[in-house]
Image 1 (tube, rainbow, N blue to C red):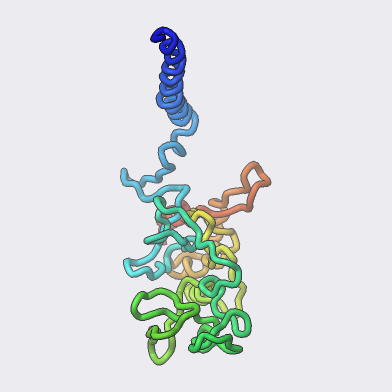
Image 2: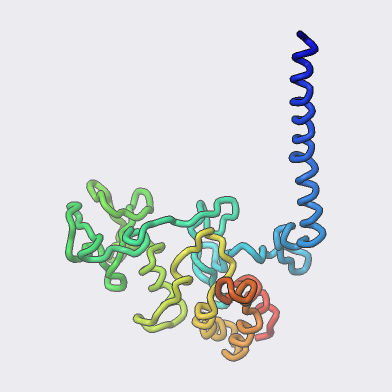
Length: 262
């Protein structure tokens, strides 16, 4: 009886040990060895160092702003990020996942997704400001956008106008045009006003970089053609020559700018 049970248990125990060693030790060591041998930089995080200090990672976007979030004019600005609790949080890669009619993404569109203070559909946006006709108001208590139930909610105001959610596409477009000195009706690249699916995109489109170039050149007292030439030198082509679109790595471009003499 005991021998019969042991004959059945022994193969299971041996296989368990073999699988545990193979999957728990051998496979990770082989993967680690291949990574270190052939892809060391990427396997170690693609960190970029200057004067012995890590200044960022080539494959993760980052902010180029002041402590209060104001964009620094002398730097190219990265694509928006939707990660929590702060932008470009690598431990919380995520997109907003908002639908194409969600006011938190596209703003309040009169006659489409706009509601009045009584919660009923409205042909006009009751929260519109002079600058932003698609304004989505902010609640005083939470600082979050309010999109449907306004009962008992105190909305934030400044100078007699509602304060709009800065993370809608219309607000981002307004901020982008203002930062870069563009006309009020100037087209804005989609990657300048929408977050990537990871929230960590390190690159921007060539069009986006070119539109930011005059502002960067003015802030650094550099000839515009020098900045445009720098963009061209740091343009990364499509993967395998046909996958995706050419782009510019923002961190690498800004580091190259810092190496120039104004």
